[in-house]
Length: 292
Image 1 (cartoon, rainbow, N blue to C red):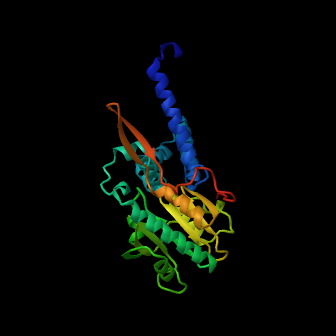
Image 2: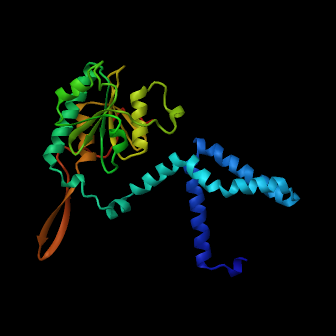
């Protein structure tokens, strides 16, 4: 058998092995893991029924398997959605996507003003231990979450954030979503995290909502703890904590303000040089930050 195999056959096997590995990695430690075990058990049962020719059982199992693909699509809908969203956020897909609302077209001054307003507001809210949840929308549009809140489309300012998150106001319990440098919506509900049982019990509902939102999108979520006043940031399912105004400003500037190429002609040749903003931090981890 090996003597008749060619290069295409080896590539086929490697591709299949890679897909199986990625599939196991995706479903590991989720509710889908138990369902996969049930499907494997059903496949073994079908093999046994075929071997012993149990006609009644064979008809029942074959009927079930005929609609099995549709059932799997329905049952695994949340997991399949997460996988497709992650695929859509890869670097190549972003290059191919026709994103006419790209933040690269926004004025840097508007984004800078928004970041400064958020950092100042978080510092003030932290001092008074007032809970806050602020979501910076990026490539992944958050229409579903926006529909659960109230459209504001306002200019960010520390005073506006203070009014929104002031205790017992109508919008203080939800999240603020920032789109294109504006406070687009407030009082929005965010999804729960995928592995909520693995999150530290010391983290409250705001932190859990921030982690859940970061798992299904590329958004940057800033959280101010209502108990301790600690400022945290969630991204890609990870939570880093213990930010202050300066370190938060550095992180948001690095994540939200794109690098722009500076094209210069030198001896008839065009060279492209990337230029960072002055306030952009280095890529090292902040001291004292811990992950989920």
